[in-house]
Amino acid sequence: MLLTAALAAGAGWLAFTREHTGQTMGAQATGAQTTGAQAGSQISGQTLTWQAASVSVGAPCLSVPTGSEAPVAPARLSGRLGLYVAVIDPVTLEPLRAVSHGQDEVFPLASAYKQAVLWALLKQKDAGALQLSERFDVTTRSQSLGDYPYDHSDVLTLAGRMIHNSDNTATDLLHRRVGLQAVQQLADDLGLCRTRLILPTKDWWTAQAGLSASFPGAASFAAMRGPALLQAAQALDADAQQNRADLLQRQLDDYFDHRYALLSDLGTQNVSTPAEFAHLVAAEFMRSGLSQESQQLQRGLMATGFGRSRLRVPMTVFGGKGGNGWRTLTFSGYLHTAGGSDVVYAFMQHGADQEYTMHNTGAAFDWINAAMKQVLLEADGGVVGAQVLARVGTKMQP
Image (cartoon, rainbow, N blue to C red):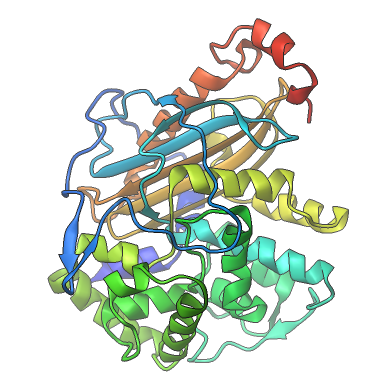
């Protein structure tokens, strides 16, 4: 099956190619918010639901205020949908104005999670735990899905490929270098209790393909947290590195063709909710804890991610990352508008009618833009009156 291979090539590269070759993916502006699979399923005798239990431990669970209901999603966007778009107070990281749909439901993140690897990487760089000049060999153990001829690349090159090209092998090399828990710790420290970031890409595909003898099953893994989650993830990672990428690809083809269970995605992949992931994006850009040098590097790399040209908002700063998988699509980003607002967005689709979801990109950004219009000031093309700016005062300044 060619579809899985196309997905494995990386959402970033595919999206970048479509964006810069003039191809358009329009959609009607009306339609149902949610269709498709039922919210709940029995897997291995246990229940997985969209309202999954906590994943993270550590800080108290973040309570994100519910935004106003998002505008109706374009009809092309089938399956289960999630959206969170907010203007953020740069001092408190609280949403000043937000619109949302399914903000607390759990979705697969696909390649959107890779920006967390970059954040963890730069934290370790600032701590002196790694150097950007370090180089890596690519072996059959480390190669993930997708072509990867770029052996002996350094950290900075891999980081660029991870964000701009959404390269899976580059991501896995860096994720393992910083440590599985280091990436999960970002969510734990923020109190993102439904966010799992612990798995390199090859690991979740190995779990779905049934190629890990140590994997406890989707429902059991989804319920794990803390040391138990780390131990299970490390065992899965060890199994994943035993599999050649081409053999993994063939087993995945068989899985998606004959054995795919929609809700198993929630217990095999990295996951989050629209509200939690939007908060992670806000923290990553506005309260990263990075040195000035690393913050500039992070923003520069994230600026090469997908989405800027799809947004109908004047802006001075942008950083974005998307991802796609089997019937899954994600987009997230941060922007500082020309009018002085800090905005974050997180779009998630799961269980789409389309197996290959990149063609839904236009409709996804139609929805994101419609939501932004509801929270932005008139100066930025929104509908919020200028009196709001006077009311919040200096909070709107970068």
